[in-house]
Length: 342
Image (cartoon, rainbow, N blue to C red; front, side):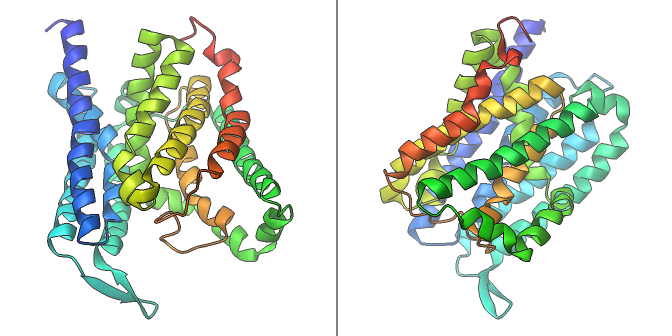
């Protein structure tokens, strides 16, 4: 098999898993929302699919390469399959609840979180056992400490700066300061590194697919800047079923989809900048984790369902476009995106 034919086969396998599986499960998400049943296991499972597509593609086409981290890949794929099975069972057996803190909670939501934690721990073990050479050969090693920590710090500051600006635009300029005066916010932030170690797998699942695999392909084909913009749009469309049937209600789905596109394109620019600057996939993985988990601090709401059934409006779109475009989108003008730098 020629390199061109192999690359095409890899890309086809990636698409079938990252998008084909996502949309098949998306139909099940829609059906589950009509019963209705708790579908909170579906977003967590979906985050695994992009990396699963890359891993399956490499296992099927690079199987003779001794440097393929097979045990890590197989462990991750097994966790992905179990997550899919959990989603299917959650629709087949609705109304299963457990009591936590004297409150009824969906059994499937709890199991998906426990599975994500257990899967992350086993994947860490498999990754460490793969050895440094295998990790380096397939983009799994940690690189450029100073640049990596710098990018993460910049994201952290911009993230809270954007939130503060959003509160100012809403007419509550002191809201961010009030949130940060609460000790609960700092306890949560300080415990974030531990949370990441216990739940990295879903976030790695997206970034290994988007930034490590698809970004270089699109940049090579369409150019450094256009490739990243196309990737952001593709990333946004990938969320479409969640936008309509999880993040908000179907009547507000179009608004959420547009908001999602803005977020994915602009945030994708920043993630791409960090990845180009460090060549370290763990940097966007950590940023993705921070982006999703610090929402609880920004919203001053530490409940698990804070991102579900959001009340989005058309009036939120202009400010989202302005803030995200200025805070993250302007990094498209940085030197890392100059033509020819790959």
